[in-house]
Length: 298
Image: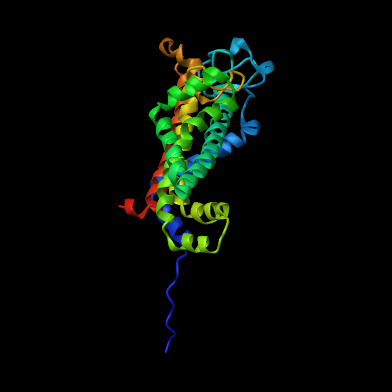
């Protein structure tokens, strides 16, 4: 008599991976975003030109059409801008700036917002009221308006842009974490931790935070795309990164005045790169939301 085969037990991580990869759109978004990250990281090695090096830029190569050969012998597959900068190289390097600003600001905003959200839920009382009123005040301002006011005071710069985005985004994380922490605070394991006289810091970050991570990951993914779009908007308006370190938004802004004169490629190709980046992140975020929140599963 043959032995009965024991049923295969699927771990939570294996179940998460299988459910995530069940969506072809999410897989496509993940693959595209991975390629974008690799292109951004390897830009100094694969880009035809260093768009930050003013010595290699030739104003006589300005506004060349896609596929043209410049004076230095470089084939500009996506054309050049008004300063003779190769658009393909500019997009590769611009992706680095956009991703650094988007991911960096999202991580910092998540750390600040999650800490304040956990503190509000755990302590309660006046602390909770004060933090949540600050959240309501922050969310009452349009993000772009608040960021413009901050950058008008601080000036241009990558760190200033990151700071402005963190200021306008931390409230989303705080509200999300607080809502989940209020539920988790009533669980038996929190009561047991209190009975063991564990320090509040360990309860907050060792017990509450891990159980609030799923919604935090979803919000963080969405906010990365939002931060990239916000940085592009600020740079397009002239208050983002400096002109010596062009992001995708600044590249789009450089070609805006030439759109009606037929020089479409200066704004068009950076815009397509920005669109693909944001859409790929949103596809991953949508699937993460469905997988990590069973109530939203179809």
